[in-house]
Each structure stands twice: as C-alpha cells, then as structure tokens.
Length: 202
Image 1 (cartoon, rainbow, N blue to C red):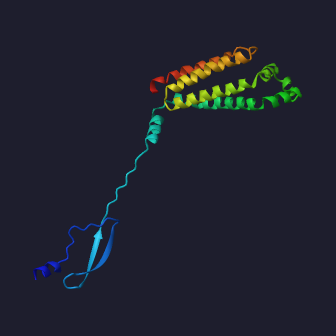
Image 2 (tube, rainbow, N blue to C red):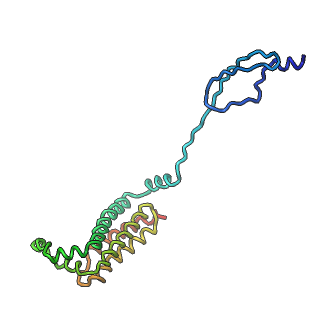
Image 3 (cartoon, helix red, strand yellow):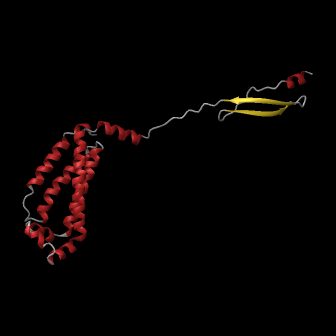
C-alpha cells in the first residue's frame, strides 16, 4: 500500500526542458493504476544575444577618431598625385618603344607649335628601366602614406625616402634635365607637414 500511494503521485522534481518558450501537452500513464494523465508544461527560456566587435574594426574606428584633418588631406593628396604618377610611369615603361616609333613618324609634331619637345626627346631617349624605378618609388610613397593614414611612424620614413630618391633619380638617368626646383619645394612642404603628425603615430 505504501508503494502504491507513492506511485499515485506524479513527481516533476529534477526535470528540466531546454528550448524556446512553448506550451506542451504530454500524455502519460500512472505506473500504479494505469490511468491516463495529461500534463500541461510551460517552459520559458531566456535567450541572451551578445555582439562582439572584432579587434580590427575597433582599431579602425579608433584611428578614424584620432586621425587629424591635416593628415587626412595630406594622405588623400598623396594617394591621388602619386597614384597618377605611378600609372603614367608604368604606362611609359610598358609602351616606351611604341611611343618612340610614333614620335619618329611625326605623330607628335602638332605639339611643337605649343610646347618645347626637347624635354620629351630626353625622356624618350632614356632607358625604360628609369620608368620602372620611378613607378616603384611612387608605389613606396603611396605605401608610406597608407601607413601614416593608419598612424604608423614607419610610413613617414618610407615616404621621405621615396621623395628623396625621386628627386635624385632623374638627374642620374637624364643629366640634361633642369634641376627640379618645383618638385623639391612640394616634397619639402609635404614632408614637413607629415612630420607635424609624428607625435600621434606609434
């Protein structure tokens, strides 16, 4: 009798349902009397969602807030100016022989009425390696500006080195060219302005 009374009571202790919030109806049979029993169970589950920001995105957002306006302008100007120079020198490196043939056939004679073609002749007479090296130096300057955009001091050294060699290289390959005074002034201005942002770089 004691065993029967214990079995008459349905015990839910120790049961746990894991899942979404729902109501379920369970049909069970009492072990003692074989009577059908219906149990309505309501389970509430709380789901917590967390969003983790990747470290790279956090670093980019930090740089966006700490990058001065002057540094942004300098980098953008470098990307545009050096990018165009990189493209033009690379095109000359790839097509210097074709341009020479066009010049020899008089395709550029119409330019002689408005400009002095002596400088063009100097460039066409030089080795194609010159244009390849110039392209590489402009690429180095762009890479240096990219690093400074991300507040890396090493980018300033890459950029400065590229500007120095860019001023020297034409004098080595084409000694007859006039001294690049204008290019020297522009390079000095950019280097000095970049240097003012070194204190915020790491």
